[in-house]
Image 1 (cartoon, rainbow, N blue to C red):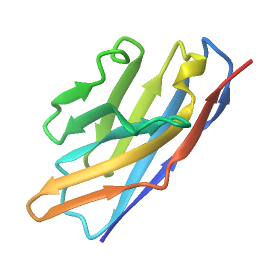
Image 2 (image 1 turned 45 degrees about the vertical axis):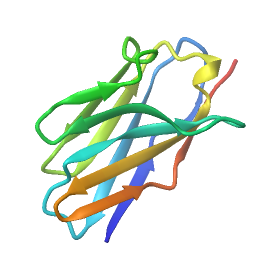
Image 3 (image 1 turned 120 degrees about the vertical axis):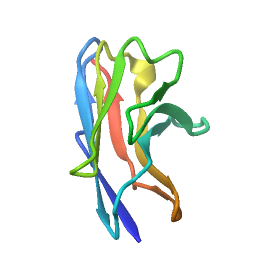
Image 4 (image 1 turned 30 degrees about the vertical axis):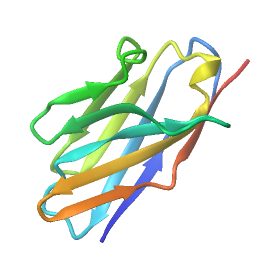
Length: 117
């Protein structure tokens, strides 16, 4: 069992920055993929960014100029640095972890990010 705990969400003004963190705990040796998805009200959950244990990243095309994913493999932690935030970035941001062997896939409970003046 793996638990994911997000932190760092909150209210930020347009143009501001925010960094999200997610710590994985439980029965873990390593986690192949960690990352972030988001879901805005009335919309489907969408990819923000993911990163493999060896550093391969995948971003939503519309976000990669403003968002940066990083991770600390030893601490089982993934970060999301968000800059130049826009009101349309308002969403619940979910941490994600996936490992192929042994197979598992987990989601965090989500952290709210609100971009508003």
